[in-house]
Image 1: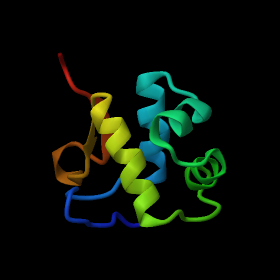
Image 2 (image 1 turned 60 degrees about the vertical axis):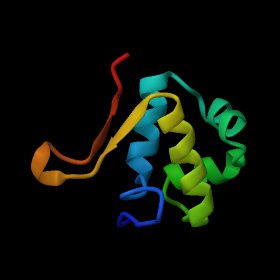
Image 3 (image 1 turned 180 degrees about the horizontal axis):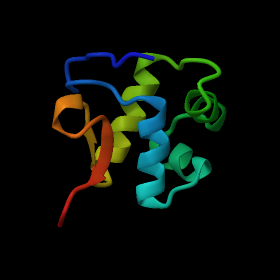
Length: 88
């Protein structure tokens, strides 16, 4: 799955970044669904890569993580694609 560009984000997160971001925050899929307003089945299918969600759902998920302090990394030459928690 390739990253997708939009007006608000340099790139949209990938399914593995979604799983990793949840891990950083110690959030379950139900917690992410509650925090983001995205359906639990949508999150599950996205993370398991069984069906791609609408772009708006990924934007909502990523924005929820970013508000919670997660930073998404997309530059493969600067250490790879991943996630990290913002300090402070």
